[in-house]
Image 1 (spheres, rainbow, N blue to C red):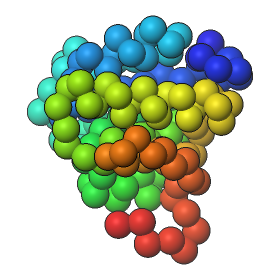
Image 2: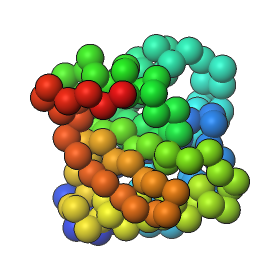
Image 3: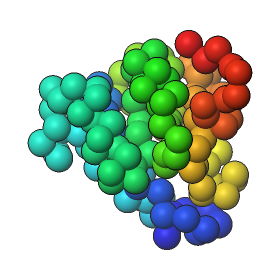
Length: 137
């Protein structure tokens, strides 16, 4: 079970553009987490990653906002997308990811169909994605 209410098991898959140190933060809070590099997916195309993300029921963690918003737009059901908006150093990535985990726990640990975005100041927004009629790019 995940942290917080324990209503769902969230399985994170962290993109290669982010640190493997995010796994430690996820595990410390009771979440399952994997990194693209440790699954042998380093340098895989975004489309190939989507096959793994959807097939593995992963919530994908990335800072590649533009490309993954586009790819998720065509998916009917997904386990969530978490975007750490700024490209920052490892210490700041961990702080922003931690803020996201706090918000996820407060929201009930179920990211099915959700987009979580973390801004540079640690502000977290959780919205339905894709949004009907929205222009999210």
